[in-house]
Image 1 (cartoon, rainbow, N blue to C red):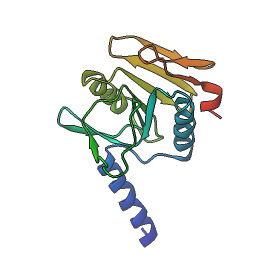
Image 2 (spheres, one colour; image 1 turned 30 degrees about the vertical axis):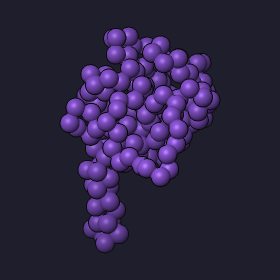
Image 3 (spheres, one colour; image 1 turned 60 degrees about the vertical axis):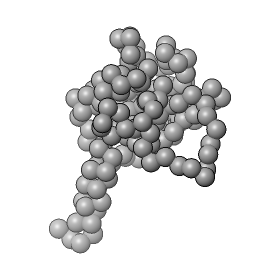
Length: 159
C-alpha cells in the first residue's frame, strides 16, 4: 500500500474505533442533514448530531439524538451524555451490517430512549421502533413518530 492509502485506512479504523460505527458516506451525510432539517421544524426539541451517549456503562454514537428543548450553554460542554434522549436516529452506512444496527436499537430502547428511527438510504425507507414495541415503516409521505410526534417528509429526506 502507498503511504496515502495506509494513512486513509488508519484514519478509517480510528473513526470506527472511536465512535463504534463505520465511517459515513456522502449519501449518509446528506440524508442525515436532511432529516435533521426536518426535525428542526419543531421547536419542542433539541436535535444533536453525532453526540456520544453513555448508557448502562457503554458508549453509543447515534447519527442524531433528539432531546427535549434545552438552553444552549456554550461555556459548559459535555463530552458524553448520560441522559437518554427521547429519540435516536441510526442511518445505515454502506459497510454496516443489519445485526449491528439492530443490537444498538435494542440497547437504546432498553435504556430509556422512547423511539429509534432506522434509516436506509438505498431503499429510501424509515422504520420507527418505540419502547412499547410498536414498529412502523415508511417509504413515502410523512413519517410520524408515535412516541414524540416528530415528523419528516420523506421526499425531503431522500432528495
